[in-house]
Image 1 (tube, helix red, strand yellow):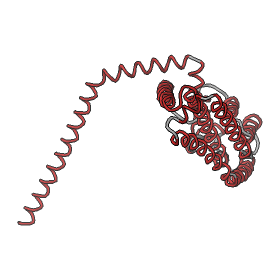
Image 2: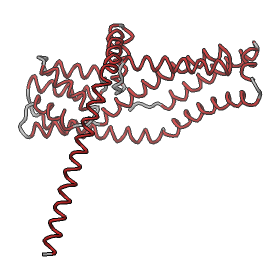
Image 3: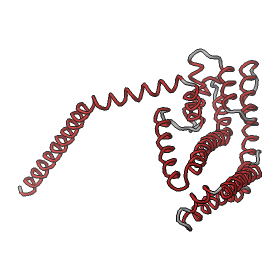
Length: 307
């Protein structure tokens, strides 16, 4: 009897706990819905303004180029948010550098920020491109396995768009969407080759186009391409390891130059502003900046090896 009572009490307690948790979750959901309905008017107005600004920017040539740069850099940021954030950063940086070194130094720093943003976008684009090239052997192997299993080339590309990872997945998904909208397989592959120009992708695209036109033993061709692409990938990794020290030198020299400027400013109160106010000091600063920039470019050119 005692055990039965204990079991009943435990069951009743468990029931109350389950019911209480359900009531608590429902109450939180109701409060969240109520808060969303209250703030919907305010947020929707902000979203409308944001959407209008986005559309207005995309109608311009600069906005379309920025959208393309964001896509190539694998960044899903809205154009409007990017432009507004960039303007705020430039204003804050210009004001801070104007207080430190005057208008000339502020103009130089704003220009360097713009050039740095452009270099960062280019670096992101190159990193995405390099990642895509490194994934080409896996893509060729997947297409060969799909063809060996009896799938058509269109079906193999659709399967690869689901099984691969970014950025290959996005590019193959785009090819699949273009074919679904009526584009031919050859045109879709050629457009992908123009978006990502490389010798490795050009060879793979040409093999796929030739197979689509004339047929043939595509499995054998794709397996041969897979072996060649893997060899090139290993070679690129070895080269990247060998030049890693040179790239570290580039970053060290960059930090050294910025550190010297901060050292000059912190050693003497208002030293940077006084230096730039003097014509001789201004000339020395401009020549030093030019030599520093040339040295950076030369180091990057020497450390860049294409395989």
